[in-house]
Image (cartoon, rainbow, N blue to C red; front, top):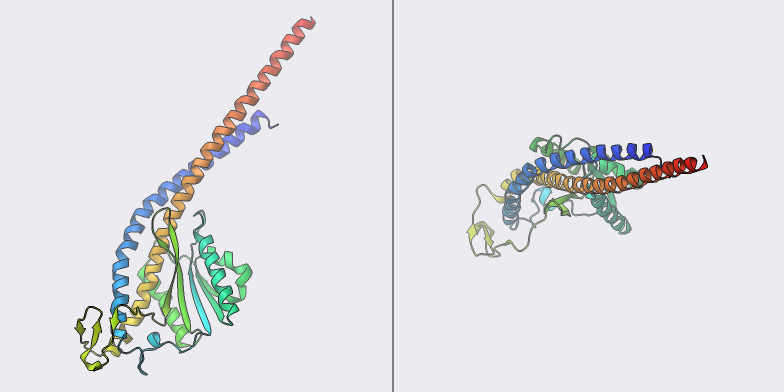
Length: 303
């Protein structure tokens, strides 16, 4: 049975932890609002960029002179997974969900005879995946979102991916991140970056005369100046940076939401533990008092 001093020390310790978790919850909540605004603001631009590139690429996807970022290498033997995790912990199942999806995907690709490489953004992902996939991790990028995601950092990551592709180090690149739905919900989302994944429903190519431009599903015809290949050669690298930046923003907002929820749960659990310890303390104190009274009364009767 713990002594009164042990219980007092434990209560004081839990109260200190509760103050820390409460403060972390408020900090995460303050960051979440701004991060959510940035993530939601980036979505329309990134999605429209993809649709526009899909419309332009529809007429040249099968051309021999299509840009490499669109045509790819023609193989799918080597896969590069860009895994977006955090540099800090205490954010619930955020990193665990990403790591679980990555493990399943790597095992599935290896079972198909593919080679897999991992480029991890965030030190937590490196720690979770290092034990099983040490030989597959090519590098870990730390502090990419400190204090907040920046487009220059995303552009540097995209430039590194492009350089690796130009050097023939992989055939397909996919970024994996947590898409922000709400403070309580983050969805693990894979997005293929290289080769550019077209949406078949958005456009239809004109089989009669390619010089007349691309025909969209709505029937509108667009003519591009300069030619489609020139546009794609300029915009595909930029789109790669935009999609990486979007993934970073979504991941950052999801991290703040997950941390706020986790710290809220921790604060409530600490409160429940304090109540339970206080009850135990009072019961133990009452038992000691009762025992002392019995000893005093017994001694008085003995006299």
